[in-house]
Image (cartoon, rainbow, N blue to C red):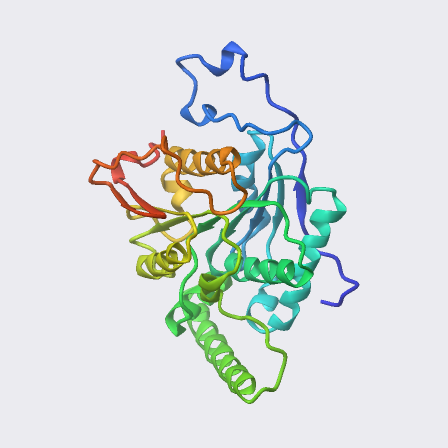
Length: 326
């Protein structure tokens, strides 16, 4: 990818919703997901930037952006090329800067902005967007970040599973190819670590876990599962705890037994309500960065499904809340 190449992104400008006073918004038969009406200035609609997982096809990412488009939020979808995530990672700083440029060129830099990132691929890209904002010394008006199935430590087993999922196909061809690519990338990463230790090579950030020390302190929501075989729940909780220690307002929502980046498919209503509630709270918070938890925060502290700390809350979504398929 050269500096002349553009990004293959998708941006949507949905129409405005009916007035909140419209009686159709308060009918008893209305789906719970329609209860959220975001409060914002008409010319400053929220912008949701969705950063896909490695190998994500846009048709799948579009299912998530539809959640926000139904609320008349502007959405920007982008997934970094697989080669840039794994072996051409020196291109990631340019992609991060280019995404910020796209937001600025579309005159969206003065809108409230949220990032919704998926797996380590999305977190890795968000890391470079964050670094680009720091280097430009002109941060966007970010109100919050949603991590879905991320971030997690880099492990050989995780890399193998990720490569295998991207390649797909029959196990007879998938397993040998995935094994070879995993070994190749492991050697490449090892040489990269040595080069950086010797002070050689371009110091490109390559581990999204480094975001635990991110200087920005906007609120963060973590959607994860105890059944995720790629990103263990312990990785997410350790990362979130570190962010809370740094004064960031953190919400953990554990979806019981849902697979990697499949929380929405498994718990559709709970997922939508969770992300919409988070965005609503961030938009109505009096401060732009790391607001204190509001006194009327929708958390029952007496419920066994909740764990609270000064700047961290945890909720467990139980199996009976799973989406019922007809």
